Image 1 (cartoon, rainbow, N blue to C red):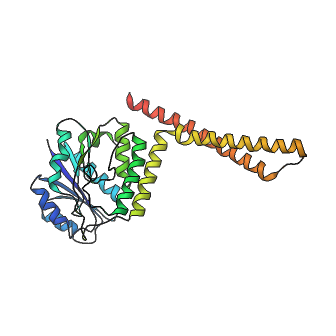
Image 2: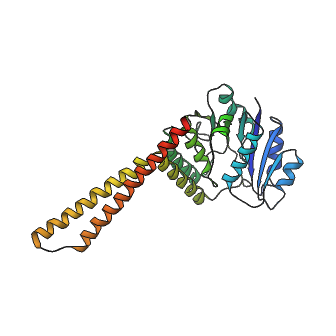
Image 3: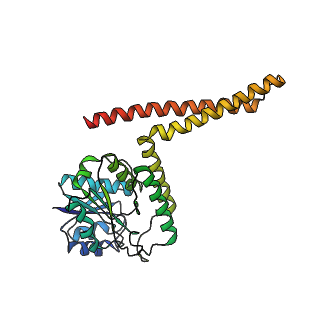
Length: 294
């Protein structure tokens, strides 16, 4: 099978050369997306024979992944492996990463840093990854250990069937959610990560926020009746309770407690908006799914 390595890179002149040289021992088809680097990342990658896609400005991790997906799809690759440019990933793990796809056991394979509990990841990042993975698992009903790993292998079905939209770090979660929607099999294999002083680090706060917002967005679309409908019912019940309380006070004391009445009316309005949103979004999603399946 034709295997392509895709590397998103931004200002990685210190590491990109070593990464490409190590990968050249395993595969020949390497795509580097230079995401608006201001250093020599592009020149080094091209000099070592990689196919370089250049963004005129830094557009974000998600845009780099989308460019790599599009290029791999155009080249009709059988398996795309995404590989970080910062020297954290090991080329030795690619064989095990692609094996489930070659054996027709999966379409998406995640290199997990936690399956064997051998990671030397900083504790603050470990906690963040585990929280984000838990949220992702709730959305896709899987039992993954590392939803945020950048070392992954994708069958060509993923390139052909998933339309990516996220521009930031949330794209990793988007792929998993949309893969689940398309009934693509997701598995994990253990990998080792090399953390060092020269490895790049994304801001953990912005990374976590991006992934969390992405997960919420796609979960609300996938399950609108749960995401909007249940809160809508709760607000409607709260609103009715406060209005009944207002009527009870009026019947007993012939006066209207404005604050209680306003809370009741506000809760009813919000509940009604959420319920209408749930019904409309559910209808739209159902129509889209029916058209996709026909």
